[in-house]
Image (cartoon, rainbow, N blue to C red; front, side):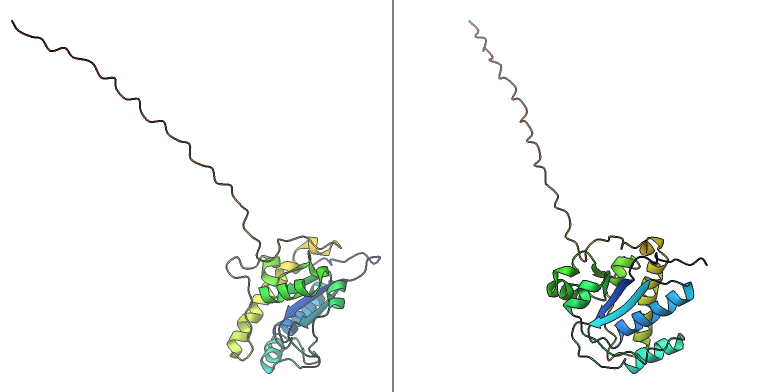
Length: 206
């Protein structure tokens, strides 16, 4: 498979995966995307992850570590990191797991506008459910399902050659408002013309 490379003159594209505690969804998405780029020989992209409600230094959950280990990916060195305005400003693309993550980034910094989306919405990998639910506290099977959802979305992004042109292709903002449709008032129907009454003359007998 031919390599998809950004020009050496251009800075690395920074992609940030947003989750909540930054101990399961974010690390799994980051770990898989890095591995998938290595397999495809893709360079010029830096993959980061951050949490909107976390503290620095937390390790991945055992379930997230195991799911990635079974896929041949080691995320044991990951440590949680909170989202900051500085990271938002540096990022070229920010991909949240739920609308809460997207809205958090948009409220944190105006720099998030135009480059922050839901992961599955941006990848167009699932037209029925854009949200990727939090597997924290759930079974290993739930972790596997979440991983499959993120893997499918990331694969679709990496298979899109436009993604590597140096400019992030625009996608619709998360949860766009439906366009306003102007309702036309129905035309009034004219009442049917009333039949003219004919005058009848009663004949009189003599």
